[in-house]
Image (cartoon, rainbow, N blue to C red; front, side):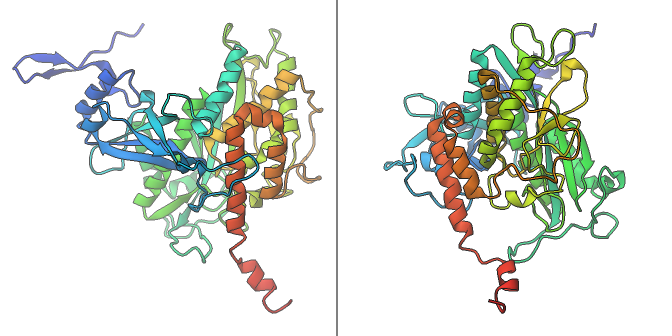
Length: 478
């Protein structure tokens, strides 16, 4: 048995000695507003970032002095923030979506369990993730964190608790302020541009030792737990695996990790990008999601029976994924660029098959002991909003268990060279999403209408841009 931790003792202003409460040393989160004040004071925090993810997973919010944050100040954001396209435009009304005429405020409600320092800021700064509610206190259905909470509440009603572990791939690229020029791999410590084919290469990781050290230091100071870090197949492509846990906590971590990795890269004069396919001819970047379901009463993994065999719930979860994930693809592949990653005979699946330790299938069951039996969804790309990707994946599995959807037999051979089972483009994906009434009802109808409208508007913006391919092959030939 470990001895109890000693409390730090500091001199008081009156010449006595005061004990420093243990909670002030928490790297991430406090229990109540009383603890907030002590936590901020102990660190000398001057400013607070009150942030929340929008539909794209971009951090939106307000910054304020720490004294104002703890003085019962009411925080609000316009509802339009969550109806904005990635380029800053707004969708047109229709198909169930209606832009609010008054563009009224939504209240920001800080989740104090997410309070953490912002280690890259020069002035002492902290950040806290917020939920959104209406002025009368009702939860806002169409904000991403609330969408995931809605799905988790549906699991809770059945006495179940999902456990997830995301894996996030990303590229390091040279700074490129001109979008007309292709992205290129960065120069590492060797002084040479990074090449491809370096999967799991330790030398590839060592090319960016100082940057990776900053990622680790920034993460540790925020209470973010990295399980492993590897170099992937692409030139300058890395992957971070997170430890398994509660879906909200893990979505929060991915949300914060993306900010952290970008800031660490900028410190070293390069970009970190989570685009699904940033460099032509290089592999795409995924956000694989490992999922298992726990019975809240027993604490047991419902995918495994007492004798260690697979349960009906395991197969029904997979069946739900097979049936509904193609309809939810727009939440896993949210941009036109996302579909450049989903190509035949590539590492990214274009099917809805499953198999045991088969990386060519959409849904892989890794080798494990029965207690750790899980289903890995390999379809999401790293550009997906983590809250929405987790919500959609877990929703599809829950519908399968509820309706006892039968899974197809597992695939024992290569599955990614056959026919394509997924939508090939953004508009097709939006149509399938809107047509899945059961999925949209579970996620929330106002969210589904808002999200679909945003994606249609983003596609129309994309269609306004003339690509190099068109100039190359059409300019003098048609």
